[in-house]
Image 1 (cartoon, rainbow, N blue to C red):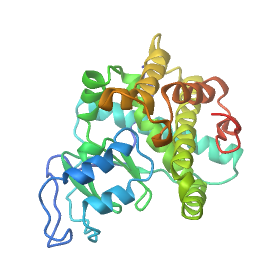
Image 2: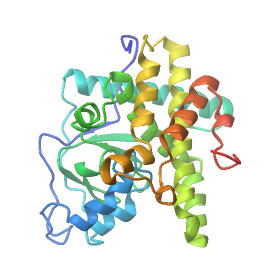
Image 3: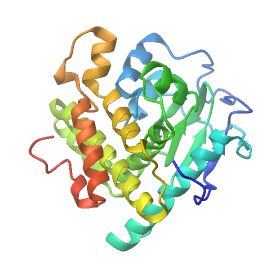
Image 4: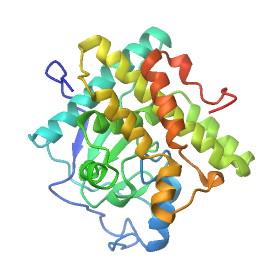
Amino acid sequence: MRMGKSRESRNIEDRRSSGPSFGGGGFGGRRGPMGIGAIVLALVAIYFGVDPSVVLQMADGNAPVQQQTSTQPPANDPQTKFVAQVLGETEDIWNDIFRQNLNRQYIAPKMVLFRGATPTACGTGQSAMGPFYCPGDNKVYIDLSFFDEMERKLNAPGDFAQAYVIAHEVGHHVQHLLGISDQVDQLRRRQPAQANALSVRMELQADCFAGLWARRADQARDILESGDVEEGLNAAAAIGDDTLQKKSQGYVVPDAFTHGSSAQRVKWFKRGLDSGDLRQCDTFSAETL
């Protein structure tokens, strides 16, 4: 990716140097690692999870959160600079989309960099869950070691694959701002049997938003290099439910999908990338995914 013209976002909270700080009993005195049951639950959101609040609260025993983690200025290293630039690009593009297409103001999320575990408004965030968005505090949480996991375990290397991760999570923030997340939560409560299917549509829409962002950012500042699109498509395919299920258990259970198949994730990411049109990302009206 060509990021020389990209500004660094100021909406970065770097909690890595201080480590997790849970305060005086704010987490029920729980300082150990996430239990095995919670880890199993977290697998449904381990890659690009949509609303982690249920899993996080279960992992945390439903304890209230006390935000006592100290925040340092972002470190001045290439990886931190890169994610700050990608976040800055998402801010600029979504600012334009909200102003021009929706006639409203875009409120940017913050990105929290952490190691191991950190308090969130959704409960205790764990590195084992992968990157996630918490609608309770409008923040994207990420342990940057996840990018190493993408390369080593998922065979999804490359800077644009990393940018796709960030853009996908910002896509969930956009869903929250537009009220889509709340509507889906209401549908889940009324139709619990459709919870997984609704989650799939949420995830695929976030994939489409990530592709839409890439298209618009490239048009604005020529950020994409040869091979970048292939990296994004490879990353989308690598985290399909069918691919992950085959790796973890050797067979596929479509009814258990929560994020979409590899083919679906590639399709919707590419739809956003090819069109750059917000209207093309309406997964909820699509008859087939």
